[in-house]
Image (cartoon, rainbow, N blue to C red; front, side, top):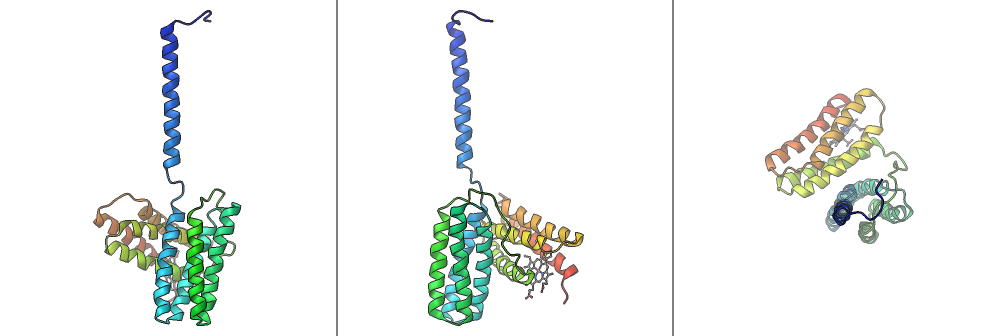
Length: 243
Ligand code: HEC
């Protein structure tokens, strides 16, 4: 045991060790803070925003049937957003998005253009409000499992937008779409319990996740990743869809 004052050099060494340890800790904390914790909400926001634009165009053309379908897509995306976290602020704010998509859907069914406009504005406002929040709690399952057909129609629309994004070389938009495809794929996966279904749906989720998380910028590889996703849609349809 060392009694009495430590030699100066020893103190200096200990101090510098301590200082560098502290620096490492502070640095690690900074990196952790800078890292986006959950990229899925941003992808869901992007998709909602894009669909508000689509619905406005459809409304200008008085195509209420398509507005209703677009509202259905936004509804499912809003439910996914809400399910990211169980904390009170997140739940309350995202519930406004969900409610506004419901209002849009019924206004479109009633062919009420003014109410459609109002609902679209409400969706936009509520989406902006959630963009300022962090989902701080635990993810939770959807309140009600959606019908498989409505998930498919939304998947189809998301897949269409992903294709356009890939073809026009908009890789970030394509990745956003892939994140949403993966989340929808998880809903598909939990909708039936057979081994074959789990495996086909699981393959789809893996392909979509790989496309979403990739950092590849080579357009040829990006195209391949998205082709792999489309192949997983077809693989499941071959086995499960009655023509
Ligand atoms: C794990 C299985 C599975 C995967 C993966 C899957 N589907 Fe489906 N899909 C189905 C089944 C089953 C149906 C029939 C649903 C019904 O009508 O009840 C279907 C139906 C559809 C329909 C017809 C909906 C209608 O009735 O008008 C479309 C469109 C569709 N899927 C698109 C897609 C797209 C796009 C993808 C991939 C991005 C995909 N699906 C991935 C199983 C799957």
